[in-house]
Image (tube, rainbow, N blue to C red):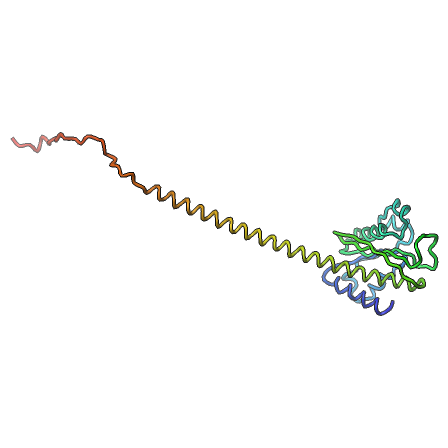
Length: 232
């Protein structure tokens, strides 16, 4: 593996060191991507496991790729690349999975796709995507080119996913802050209304009609003397 690909692998690993794990599902590269990543010291912290599934049966049994899909689309297709990545992701319980399925050469074994054509699948627990490219070279050059393309693709989609996650986090934070502000303002208005109502009730309880409660009643005119106080 050339120095540029090794440097690209190191770039991906720096992202994984944030507490993430990766798993790999390869076909035509025969484990070269897994080897490139595990050449980096400390791989046990972020590399779970990998699969080399060359045949249809291996893809079906190990990665749960659809037999019908393989027969309809062929192994070198976007759909198969995605299912390979998703199957590896589920079995390894990793944060991200990378798959490679292509035609390294020198022949294409009757496929309509050209030698050097490859699909790379990237999957996480919330999204999955596949991209293709055409590389010209011999078998070894194609395998190395496939690995380098897979690393670059993984980094690009990883960065996009992290950027989107951060955007969503900030948007959610803003929504929470706006909701808290609305709730606070509503609480202030409720308190104002409650205070106004309490003040109105207190004023009403202290009002005086201006009428004498004894008005209308006859004043007693009879004077009763205590017999004992009268003198003969």
